[in-house]
Image (tube, rainbow, N blue to C red; front, side, top):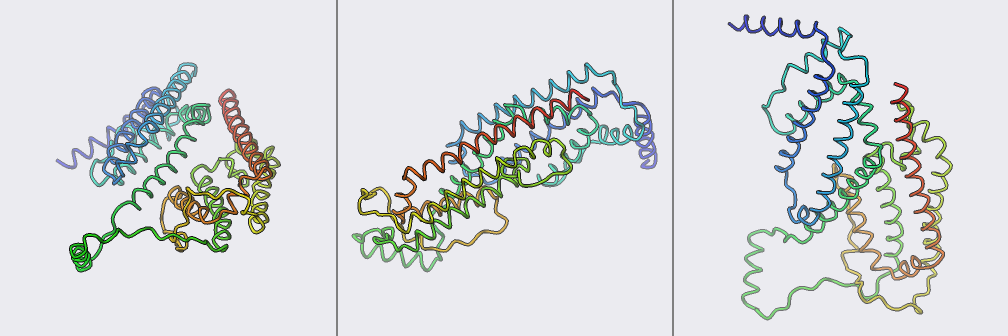
Length: 375
């Protein structure tokens, strides 16, 4: 019986792999696979431990991302349909490719295993069908580098950082677990002295200048971490302009004319750091109003070790929080960062960064569109 089933299955594959596959059917199967994977990602994502307070707080952000994801999906789908309609090719003519695609078209992935295994199997099938649906790659690249695609990319990066900061904040608010003996002793102490005052946050009334030096270094480290995280998240971001990609001609053509502007942008960032290094040690704080809404906490003295295997966005959020605590302990830094000269340098850096990002995104989108026209 098993032999007959195996023979039937083999004959079925041979018939379909030898018959030219309809491109529209292949592309429709690819889009169905993407929808199935999206539903599985959502289902498995709901099983993960996510702080619901953060999700509720950022509900509007997630709804906006969903809106742009639907727009990108529609743009890509319409592009595939129009390309198939205009193309003279209606079937996959290559016998080898036909055989390869048939194996993924008619063999469904197993639903056994945990979420990560099921997602990996489905992703493998979708990637294969994407290669079989010839217009898919070009259309998806066009959608990603369109105005809506660039907006979506920025929203996702912003939400990742905000979620990491929110999760870190909620984690700090949670009560720490204590041993049973210690808990019993604490309860007894409270019972014996109901009037005992709640322990206050330790405050440093006269912060040492060493905390200013730690703040300056923290700012530099945070900038480096954010840059590396940006490169890791998007290898074709403006922070990655110093990296070559010989396998992507579009990136190479857009990157080279921008290297000089990229160098000038980083030079302004370095000038801003250098200005603070010189200004903070000599800043005159006696003429400034005292900042009463900032408190230097003793926790700023704590050395924080990096956590292995942590998401880079969460690492950046933790570092920014650490820098914020240190800044509260350095009035000199506040004085220097509010100076006119620092404002000029930092504003020029931000302006150059914005212009560079827009130029790069426009170039990437234009090059991809031109490639599509040639093909």
